[in-house]
Image 1 (spheres, rainbow, N blue to C red):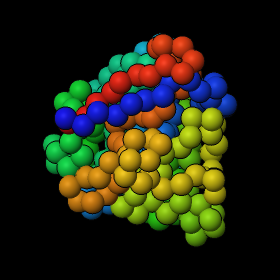
Image 2: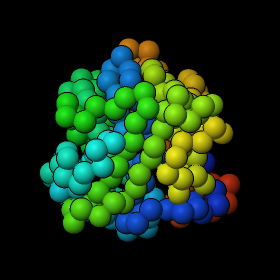
Image 3: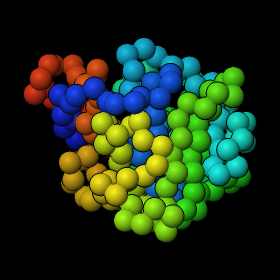
Image 4: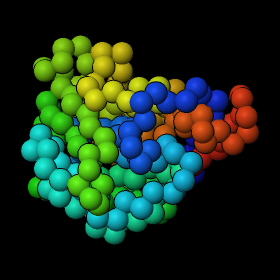
Length: 208
């Protein structure tokens, strides 16, 4: 088992999207498949049944999650990937408790693309436009993901201050069997609303 310490003493995230579910990490191309991570940064559970995803088509219902994610607890992260979920879980060594939806073959991400998350009523919950060509100086997430800093969850466009994941970085990134680097299914650090032990406290999370 590999253990990751999560620092839980941040300021509140600015501009958190409706329903408190945000895009927290993405990789547009990887040896073990592209992925998008969604995290509930709020204080109450969120039912993601019948929520949907779209890329630049920006069409609610383009890809339905059905009941795979179900109720997402505060602090929980879920994964959308183009890979077979079992293969993705094995490649990253993720615990069985991490919810993974795939394979996503209908709306694959490109180098310059957009991620749109919709609730069951078709309302836009969160959006991220990215691409180092469209937005020069921003991360190109090929084989290395980008973890969005909690303070920047409100941004709808990738920022030049965001960096690519590196093994053992401040987000707790690790290397998959295909030598991709990221933290799918785990957010480090968690939003301040989820800090369990007060300022300077630590929350222990793990993956296999």
